[in-house]
Amino acid sequence: MDKDGRLKLAVQKSGRLTDPSLDLLARCGVKLSRGKDQLVGFGENMPLDVLFVRDDDIPDLVQEDVCDLGLVGLNVLEEKRLALAARGVRASFESLRLLDFGRCRLSIAVPEGTSWTGAASLAGKRIATTYPQLLARYLAERQVAAEIVTLSGAVEIAPRLGRADAICDLVSTGSTLDANHLEEVETVLESHAVLIRTPVALAAVKSDWVERLLLRIDGVQQVKESKYIMLHAPRAALEEIRRLLPGSESPTIIPLEGHPDKVAIHAVCRENVFWETLESLKRAGASALLVLPVEKMLS
Ligand code: ATP
Ligand code: ZN
Image (cartoon, rainbow, N blue to C red):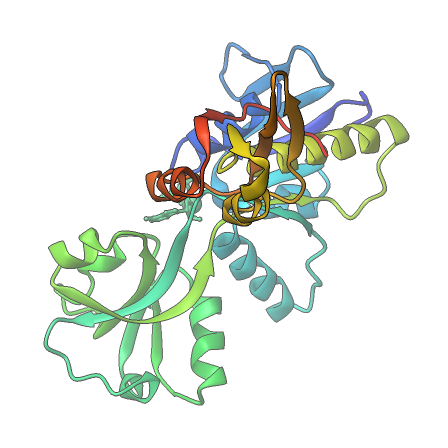
């Protein structure tokens, strides 16, 4: 649909995915200016525009090629995929990257004190959810016949209102369940945000930008946990110290002027560096230890 050569990316307008999505874009170097209506963000330094929409609309916008890319929860994506399949339509959005935000799980929960011996306990029960397709698949895979009560929200109060015996809803910390005296008994889907793209071939300029964006996203995701560590080590302890450096493949080893028995080691650790690690390194003979956050990384 778009002929202006600018990439269109759909992002949740206001909700749990909004801030982490915008944060990811900012870390990828995308500078956005919001239009007057606040519905579109214009990329000032790259040909990318962000459309702010309800998360539930994101798979359709990409499926229908209104947007080239979308940032959406796997839960919404899979529900949509199954809903399309039920109508005989093949979902055509492609997942490009799993992202490390929007973590939650779609779970079955029952009122506290309900006896639970596995999915079979749901037989003949009414289960309230906003994810009827994922729930139906879960029940079918376990050959359990239950009634699915599809709601558009406020699922967690359905048992109290007598509308359902159990629920199937998104959980992250479980505090909403606790507040409603519900107990999580089984996970239907582990979810996180995903970057999806249209299956339609993009013009070369656009697909180049998609590639560049992907490289930057990979870089951003890698640096989150990464640390740059610098230390001095006796040559004799080199092997042991290399072994102790967490998640670092090939540290740089530099001679130290005036200290033939010592070297400086610089390494990128792709895991967090804890105090315990530093203590072990010190015990192994390391000194002048310095741990720095990594801001950008491109392999
Ligand atoms: P919209 O108005 O865009 O439809 P919404 O109410 O459906 O908003 P949010 O509650 O903001 O959506 O959740 C958006 C997505 O964030 C969810 O689909 C899910 O992928 C993710 N998410 C992460 N943690 C949670 C959580 N604790 N509860 C619900 N969703 C979560
Ligand atoms: Zn929604």
